[in-house]
Length: 72
Image (cartoon, rainbow, N blue to C red; front, side, top):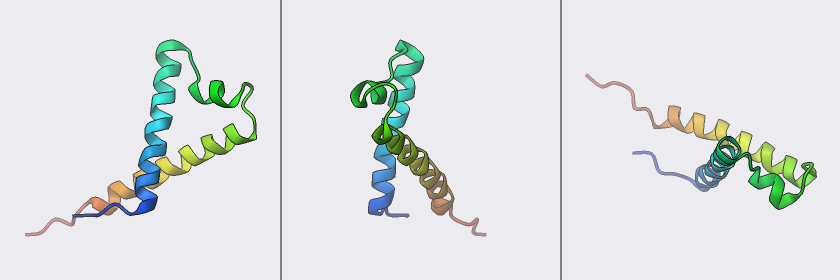
């Protein structure tokens, strides 16, 4: 079984934050990150969006790391 390292745990938290933000945007037309950090999105907001995107790439790679080869 694959053990999560610190980067994977941080990535998971960032992906959850990003998905909650998208849920709020879709359901309530409310941008949580934009509201907390100011609209229009400033440099800090852009950095958070970039980190959430990078975290999603890490989570995709985690899926492939967790796959075990088929054993006969």
